[in-house]
Structure formats: C-alpha cells, structure tokens
Amino acid sequence: MQYSIAATVKAMKIQEVILKAVSKEILWIDAADIIGVSYRTMKRWKERYQEHGYDGIFDRRARRPSPKRAPLNELETILGLYRDKYMGFNVSHFWEHLREVHGIKRGYTFVKCALQTAGLVAKTKVRGKHRRRRPRKPLVGMMLHLDGSPHPWIPDLPDTFFDLLVLMDDANSKIYDMELFDEEGTLECMSAIKNCVEKHGIFCSLYTDRAGHFFFTPKAGGKVNENNLTQIGRALTELGIVPIPAYSPQARGRGERMNETLQGRLPNEFKLHGIKTKEDANRFLKEIYMPRHNKRFTVKPQEEGSAFLPVPPHVDLDLIFCVKEPRVVGQDNTVSFNRRILQIDKSPLRVSFAKCRVLVHEHINQTLSISYGPHVIGRYDSQGRSLIRLKKAA
Image 1 (cartoon, rainbow, N blue to C red):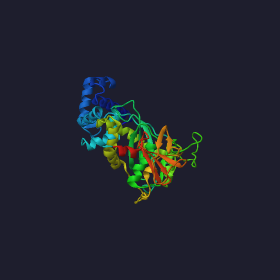
Image 2 (image 1 turned 90 degrees about the vertical axis):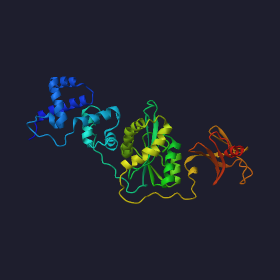
Image 3 (image 1 turned 45 degrees about the vertical axis):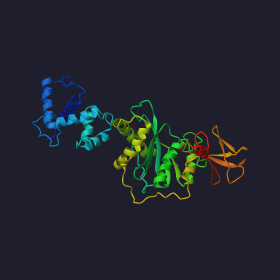
C-alpha cells in the first residue's frame, strides 16, 4: 500500500524539523511550534522516529517499519560528528571519514540526505545544459593537464591566497605533482613539469589554459601564436612535448573538476592536521595527501602500457627548464642580467669572451648560469655572485 502525496509531504516536513532538532540547530519545543503540534506530540514522534526511523513518522496502521531504518542515536552521532569535527567537508569526503575513521557503514545517499535535511549541507544545484565528455586518452603519458587554482587553501590564513599547481594525467586522473606557490608563473610551472619528467619520463602533450606564461595570444580571447614560443613553450618543444591550448573552461572540464574536488578537501585536511604554513602544507601534500588521493581517485586507463619515454642521457634538464635570455659579453667579460652583473672567470675555451653571444639561464632554484654553445662558463647565486669563487673562499 502506497502513501498519499499529502502524507508523504507531511512526513518529509516532520523529518526535516526532527533532524534539525537532532543536530541541535533548534530546540525540541521549537520543533513542535514549527510543525504546529503540542510538545507531548513532538515527544511521541521523537520516540517513534527513534524506534522505527523515517518510516515511524507515518501512520503505523498502514505499513510495517522499514528493515533498513537507522536508530536515532546513530543519526545523532553522524550529525554531531559533522557539526563538531567535520564542518565544511563535502558529503563524499565526510562519508569516507565515517567509514574509514569511525567505522559507520551507512550508505552515501543516507548520509547526504541526513546532512541536507538537517540543514548542515546545502542541496546541490540543478545541472546546466547537457555536454558530451571528451574521451580520455587511452595510455598514460599521452596528455597531461597543468592548472593553477588560486584559493585560501590554509584555514589559519583566511586572507592569504596561494596558487595550487596540479599536474594530472588525462588517462587515469593520477596526480604526478602538486604544490602551493605564492603565484603561478613560468618557473613554478617548469618546476612541476621537470619533477614529472625526472620521475616518469618525457610525455607527449601538455594541456593548459592560455595564460601568458604558456602562450602568446596577440588578441585577448583569440587564438594563440604558435610560432612565438614562451619560455615554457620553448622548453616543451626542446623535449618534443606538444603544448595544447584550451579555449574555454568547459574544454578543461576534467582539470576544473579536479580543482573543485581539491578545494573541497584540502582546506579541511589542513585544518584537521593543524597545518598553518605553506611549507608544512607542501610537505603534507607530497608525502601524505597525494598518495592517498591517487589511491582514491585514480581510474584504470583504457589500455595497458605507457607513452612516457626515458630522458636521453645527454639531456640536461636544468638547462631546459629555465628562463633563457641571449646576451652579448662586454669588454670586461661581464654580462648584465636583470640588474645584476655576472663576471665570467678565466676559461680554457678562450682568452676572452668579449663580444661573444651567450645564453644566460635563470634556473628554478633561482641560481644563474651562462652557457657558450654546449659549454657552461659560469654559475652564480641569485645575487649574481660566482658560485665557484664562493666555494673557493669557503
């Protein structure tokens, strides 16, 4: 026998008010006033709900109680845990902690409905128009996504926005590198790519937005100039990696969804583990969170094998993943670079490098070097002081 629509609507209203009282958002006597019944009736409904669960609110003569009903004390425990310890977690994240940490095996839908009905979690909005998802690449290493997400990631620093750079494989959603930076830029992005190449090898293509450090775009919102490479574009091209620009947020949907997932989880994880600085956050990301995240979210690629290729022995990644600027050496064997004077020491290659064209490299770790053809003829710290002379002086 099915309940009438009026009976169902009434039960849903009663359940919503009871859950608000269970979660201690309102008092039981206030719940009675909202529903329009006496406090004694409210107490009877509470007892029936405690004994029979949601089904107990209906007319007991019309139907037997559901065998899957949840005791009220268990519901109080779930709502209390969320309110007191996990406030701000999304439903999926909280549900995982319920199962893994607290041993509560209730289903995801039950937990979601309980939190939403109690007013602790907002109900999801209706989705927009239908879009067709782009198929994943069949092999790992065929295409990687790199994106930065500005957000107040650390709850103890609510007014400080960091950029979280995430490098993810399109084939299986595995994250290869993630790190918080003050601001996304050329060297920061190079750091993520270099770490991946060192650990896994050279991949086929990199999918990014059209930020200025990835592509030159002559007209705002228009097509990129593929012939005028940025420093990152040049580094990728030297390794044979194809840079691919995205022309809309929807085109980067897989990366955008990952950013939403991380924004929902990481601040709560940082708060739970007492993390208060960027340095501690980055250690936590690389040592603890990233392996756990990959175990949870990595999917099986369509095909076995890998498109990653080993780095050739003669390739120096430090001379690829850096900012390169051409310079002409002065008569006193010095080079000017960003308000720093770099003195070239004596070399067996030439008596003097005056008027020679050289390349100045600004590396990821902020050090500098000068190369003449395939030869490195000078290494300097971030202030422009010769590392060779500093080493001898020490």
